[in-house]
Length: 315
Image 1 (tube, helix red, strand yellow):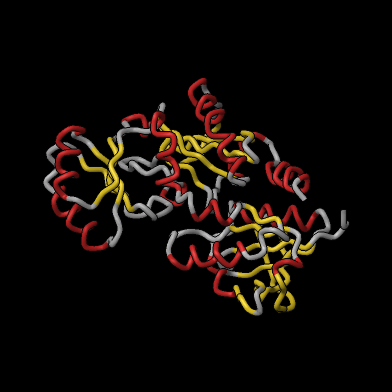
Image 2 (image 1 turned 45 degrees about the vertical axis):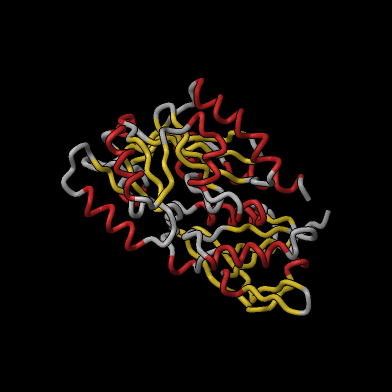
C-alpha cells in the first residue's frame, strides 16, 4: 500500500462551519497525522468532463492551536477523482437536487476510488425514509401531504411530531399537543413551504430523558451518547442546546444495531449515526453523522482512529 494516501473531504466550506466539536475536522486531522495528503472541495467544485469526474480541490491543513481548531487552504488544483484513494462525502443536508447530483457524479469514480459512504446508497437512503425499512422499531409514522390523513393520524395519536422529510439538525420540527389551537396553522405552513411529503410521528414522551446517538462504523457499534433536550425544548440536537451525557447500550439498542448492521454493510454505508428515543429507532443518518467528538470526550475513546483503521482495510 502507498505510504502517502490522497484523501479528499467533500464538505461545506470550513469558514461557514462551527468547527468546535466538528466530526469531519477530527477525521481529517487524523488523516494528516497518518501522513496522508488531505484535500478539500465542495459539491459545487465537482466537474464531469470527457467521461471522467474531477473536482477543483484545495490542499487542506488542519491543526489545534491553543485548544482551538484551525485550518488553512493550500494550492488549488483540479484533480481527477480516480487519482484519489479515499473520498469522504461529508457535506451537510438539505438532501436536495444538488446533493443528489453530487452522488451521481461521485458514482462515476466509485469503482476506482473508495467513497465513504457509498454515493449510490446515500442517494437511496435519506434518513427519514431509509429508517422505514425497520418499521418494527419505529414509532407510528405517517408520510404524506394529504391533510385529511394528518387529521386522522392526530385524532388517533393525540400528541404528534411533524417535521420536514429532508430537513436536518432539528430544523422545522414541531411538537403538536392534543387540542393544540395552532395545529391547522402549522399544517398549512408545511403544505405551503414543502413541495414534497412531510413526516408525522406519534410523540415519544421519553424524549425528555434524551435522544441516544449511536455511531456504527462498518456495521460495528463504536460509541454512543445521550443528548438531553434543553428546558422547554423537545429537540435534542446539540446546536439547539441539547446536552451530551455519557450512556450505554441497553438490550433493545443492541437488538436494533444487530438488525440493521448487515443492511448497512451490504449497502456500503460505512459511517452511520442512528437515533434512538426510548425503545424507538427514529432516524438512520448516512449523510454526515456527527457526535464523535462528544463520544470521545465522555468515554476517552478515539473513534477517528477506528474509522481510519477500518477504512484502510477496505483499500
